[in-house]
Length: 233
Image 1 (spheres, helix red, strand yellow):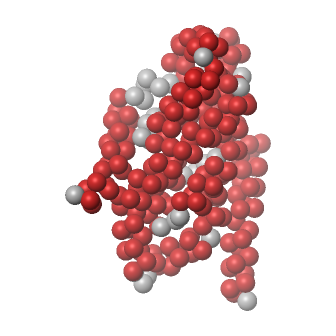
Image 2 (cartoon, one colour; image 1 turned 120 degrees about the vertical axis):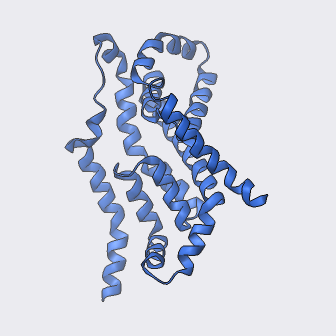
Image 3 (cartoon, helix red, strand yellow; image 1 turned 90 degrees about the vertical axis):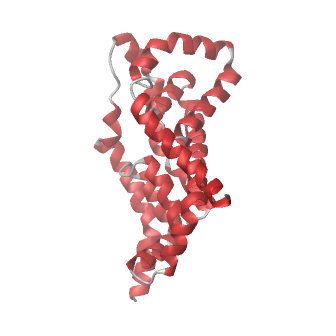
């Protein structure tokens, strides 16, 4: 029963993610935000503190259950609360949700997977050792470069035995640049709504935005490169 209890949280998350992909993808959308924007703004103005707490809580649930709509939630944070404190709300909600997924995955399957990797003597074991040795740099790169889905970036560290502290710190810091971009877009949605347009969410993949992100990722990779050069010498 203890084994089933440990696996239950991550199994529930996977089930919620599947149900969300099937039934919520069209409900948590830019169109829904545009439709309800007046109600949301009125509620924020009347109950700012509660609206702030409720927004962070909803963001945590979206990320923790891997539901669709994290990008829309980030835009909503910027739209309702501006670049600041909207960005802080977005990063906080995403980080807490990611930590919840990480802990559930580590308790359910991660510890056993990490132990099996460590017990093997092949390339998998060497890869695990290399990632653990350079965990801070590897985790930062994983967060800074928007190539890996956020959900997988929460699961992989749990399966290779990364500690909670490196995961939490690198998640909080690593998602800040992307959160800044999308929160900035969200803070300007009032004008977008007035023109009846849709925001360009692909802006993060343009050179002016992606270039600095890749630069930060390269900077994060320096400790790995230096260690490799020292070993060769």
